[in-house]
Image (cartoon, rainbow, N blue to C red; front, top):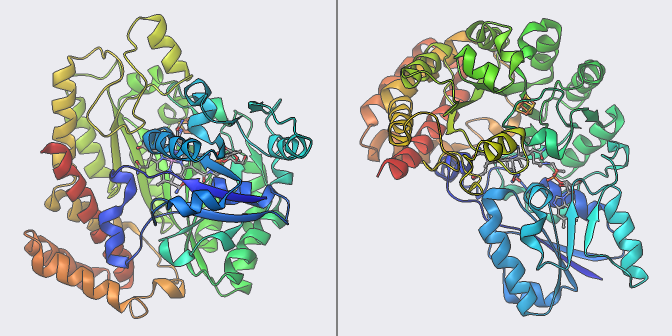
Amino acid sequence: MRVLLVYPTFPDTYWSFRHALKFEGKKSAFPPLGLLTISAMLPGIWERRLVDLNVENLRTSDIEWADIVFVSAMIVQKESLKEIVARCKKLNKRVAVGGPYVSTSSEQMLEADFIFVGEAETTVPEFIEDLKRGVAKHIYKAAERPSLSSTPVPDFGLIDLNRYSAMSVQYSRGCPFQCEFCDIIEIYGRVPRTKSNEQMLRELDALRAADWRGLVFIVDDNFIGNKKNVRKFLPELIEWSKRNEFPFSFITEASVNIAEDEVLLQMMQDAGFRRVFLGIETPVGESLKEAQKGQNTRRDLLESVRKIQDYGMEVMAGFIVGFDNDPKDIFDRQINFIRESAIPLAMVGLLTALPDTQLWHRLEREGRLLKESSGNNTDCTLNFIPKMDQTRLIEGYKAILNNIYSPREYYQRALDCLSRFKQVQVEPRQNGVMMNLKTFIRLIVMLGVRDRERLQFWNYFLRVIRYYPRNFTHSLTLAAMGFHFRKITASYLD
Ligand code: B12
Ligand code: SF4
């Protein structure tokens, strides 16, 4: 059996990081972990190839080579997914589809031969047996959310690691909270399930053996969703990192209540965590209540961000405008909060109703749902009728983007962020500037010579050298990211 695994293209958004990746000479930020995991579930004698359209083209000969094609996608990839399925069907190939988009919108993908709804740890083995017996079904839906104990080490050997800026591993799935707009809890559930410590360390060993050095994204919905297990995992991760001379630094996503657990923060710092993504959403208490985000109303959000930064971890965060309870001055309040929190990578989006979420069902009941979302909550479109005047909301949203990613605001936030790190961690070797001389030169040429905003860059650069020399590498990463945000903002505001 020859299996072709295909990952559709992402649109160019804040999350593509494309303009920042160019400095590093990378094609994509992260590999398609879902497909790498699925591949590892297939019988060892099956041949496999993977084509990630974000790093290479899909050739007709690739499809012709295969007996079956596996495709995975998020909503933002749906157009590309549909094109891939159509190309494969035209060549008479059988196609299996799965992943978050298919899990929430399976009725949109009926042209595929095999549809996988939800996680695949139990359904893929069942499918393989059915296929062998010639009785494979059209739709596979797991009866319950699987334990992660059977999740194999992803097939990292299928990709060229050098094309990616970071590698991904997953420790847990699911989140105990119940935010109204969130589809994580619909897809992966509210009981966070984790892998065992041994499983995780095996995955890290595999990355190390594949010669990966540098950033690893622990792609959990909420890394501290199961705090009890994470407290047992971190000491082993620290030991592993020490034993292996800190080959990786980590980034992850977590809920804001992480800030109240200093023991955990200390362990994360010791293990080499560099950045934590938080869902802050809004500084407005009424809107947080509407979003059922009680975990954010129970604490001072600015204090929480500062606490995490105290432990040398950069905070990156998601913000949303468009809640029913957003006051008229929401746009200024978001801008002020982002400035005061010193969060350089502030991902501000418009509220979006994703399929099958609580928000989706409420808006449907209220007759306010307009269409399926594009999945990209930064494209200045709405898929529901907001309470605030629509034009005002979109104009206000654009005003936020225009402000927070302007060079002056952005570089200042980056400096404020660096000023809050009390300690600096050891850089993994691949991230060292000398090792990445080419990246450094490209950055200086682009931001310090060619860019219209070069004076702002040099001002930033000199202040970093003077006040935060130990955070030099981190400061350059932030400068590259700022450039990306600025470019994307310009394309939205055109
Ligand atoms: C890492 C990540 C990213 C990375 C991209 C990584 C990459 N290259 O794939 C980054 C940070 C860039 C990213 C960006 C975005 N992301 Co994202 N991301 C994730 C995250 C946290 C982990 C993905 C992952 O690796 N999972 C681990 C694998 C093992 O899980 P899995 O993919 O679900 O695979 C399992 C099953 O689904 C199934 N399966 C998957 N594919 C297939 C295929 C077949 C054939 C079969 C049989 C089975 C199968 O088998 C696997 C094992 O059970 C998920 C959340 C999550 N828990 O998955 C969100 C998530 C996928 N992202 C999401 C979103 C919305 C986005 C953005 C649009 C954000 C935004 N608001 O703009 C952007 C889009 C990018 C862009 N340029 O526009 C949503 C998708 C919602 C949806 N219904 O489609 C998710 C679910 C999170 C959320 N609710 O917010 N993301
Ligand atoms: S904390 Fe994050 S992952 Fe958890 S329910 Fe809320 S939005 Fe979803």
